[in-house]
Image 1 (cartoon, rainbow, N blue to C red):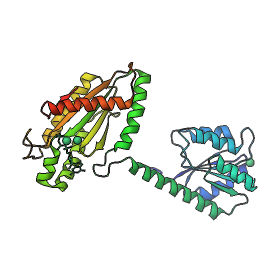
Image 2 (cartoon, rainbow, N blue to C red; image 1 turned 90 degrees about the vertical axis):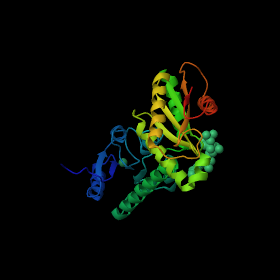
Image 3 (cartoon, protein in one colour; image 1 turned 120 degrees about the vertical axis):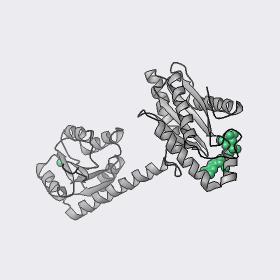
Image 4 (cartoon, protein in one colour; image 1 turned 30 degrees about the vertical axis):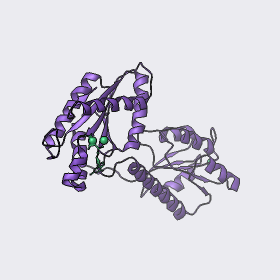
Amino acid sequence: MTEPDERPKILIVDDTRTNIDLLIEIFRADFRVSAATGAARALKLARAEQPPDIILLDILMPEMDGYQVCAALKQDERTKGIPIIFVTAVSEVMDAARGFAAGAVDYITKPFYPPVVMARVKLHLDLKRKYELLESYAFLDALTEIGNRRRFDLVLKSEWERAHRSRQPLSLIYLDIDHFKPFNDTYGHGAGDDCLRRLAGALSATLRRSGDFIARYGGEEFMILLPYTDPEQARTLAQKLLDAVDRLAIPHAASPVADHVTVSMGLVTLDPVAGGDPLRMVAAADQALYTAKRSGRHQVQV
Ligand code: GH3
Ligand code: MG
Ligand code: MG
Ligand code: MG
């Protein structure tokens, strides 16, 4: 079996073949290099299934100039995150400003010194990696390592819009641990944290469809979003979640409900034909959860 090629991908765009060859020579050892001599081919390669990690872009080209190519890439959701460095003979300061305005991260003038081109490419790749890492942390709950509320809000909005567009049902479960305050008081905050982690793991493991999504919404509250799931299917899943928590059998001597940690759930299914907004869906699930609590906890209510 051959090792997968982990080297970063660089796309070189220049209408002059000798310029391309010069740049390929610089990067061929450490990078997977692709090249285009025109805008159309460049855009096609950038939008490919495996897009480049970084693009070196010439300015003066026939058909479409580099500024236009850059603007097109920055407007496209699929390619807007790819750092673009202009490599060009156009060296007026005004042109560099125009390059940055078009969305480039750097501007290198010809003739260039190869180690500087390499250093700048590596710098921007490094910045991009760090940015992506920070971005992933921003949407993760540090304790349970599932999505956080910020992530949930975004996913809910996009799934809600998709459900309306496609006229498909969307179900939401608002889950809250029963009598968690006395759990902490009895076993300590460390045990409480551990309980939250184990619950998050058990709930996640119960979700089967690739679109199912779980997030920690608040202290001891979780949200589970189920695209393309009707009320009956959602109810079945909610019961499975309830059972999964029971099977963890985390002792809870101070609970009036059971001898172990239990949860309550409020369940709603969006009618894709009706209006409303994502927040109203959360409010409805919260209302159902409140009913579950009032009706004795350790149950699902709609
Ligand atoms: P109910 O059944 O009505 O939901 O009762 P409850 O005690 O679970 O609800 P309440 O809202 O009164 O208390 C929630 C508790 O959850 C209070 C807080 O100490 C605990 N909690 C919230 N976040 C964390 C956390 O990150 N770690 C730990 N250990 N406890 C937490
Ligand atoms: Mg040119
Ligand atoms: Mg709560
Ligand atoms: Mg609670």
